[in-house]
Length: 356
Image (tube, rainbow, N blue to C red; front, side, top):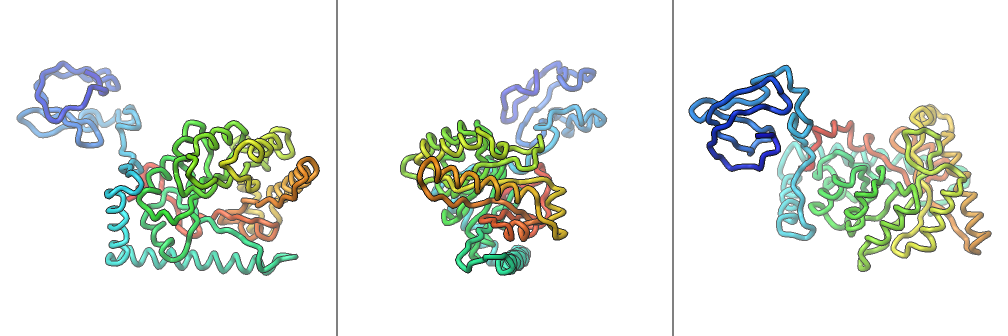
């Protein structure tokens, strides 16, 4: 028998077992096999339960990841608008009203949000040529944070939230109010576009990095859903670890042009960059971020080319700036900033994160 054997409720059987990941382990006896726990365990029919870890503790690291630890983010999926999803939302609201720890956490989050909003206002005021009607959209990046944190901020007026992982967003959005505007800001994999397209209250995707992905997102978006705002990601730092198109490249223009002319269910909003960590840290110390300057320059080039070739006046929005550098981003013209840790605090490891 191998670990991939189909699941049984609790059946008795005799076997001579050779563990595929523990090649030296052999035993023969009648065992009871149940899979109700994260780790498969074997129990002697008339003895105490034992597990692979207790048999050979030194080989724990040899077990495959899906068996060696529980993936906490693997919460249940709910159908949008279903009774089960509504029940989860009701329980979260009830907890925010009655649970002392939840109420304290909500107050902390709201204070953090108000602090960021105050800094945004100050940065706008300090910006040369600032106008009162210049909008800076604050996206609260809730990656790896529980649904109740998001609900607490939404109940206090925050509308826009950002997620980095499609699967996490897919599990969060049905159990939270449809009045939330979701932003996807992570690396976009082609295999995940179908799910992303079917999130009705998906407001924007900030990480389009080629025309093919844009065309696929457009094709898979249901006809009766609102259009998705899209930002084309630019790799302003030139780092191999960063996604995005090269500044001023033909591929960048082709992607922008394809979205504008061939994707009726998408709305080309502007450009996005992440930038280098060192430049973000420098911006925090008062220096201008070179990545932001590059994005401003590229946006101006595209605006001019749209007007020259298509005869249209375009003003692009810039999605740039995070917790360490959003004030500098605003000073250089950011229309959209993505702030996570300054609002929600330090993130847990992905393996330890939970939605509920």
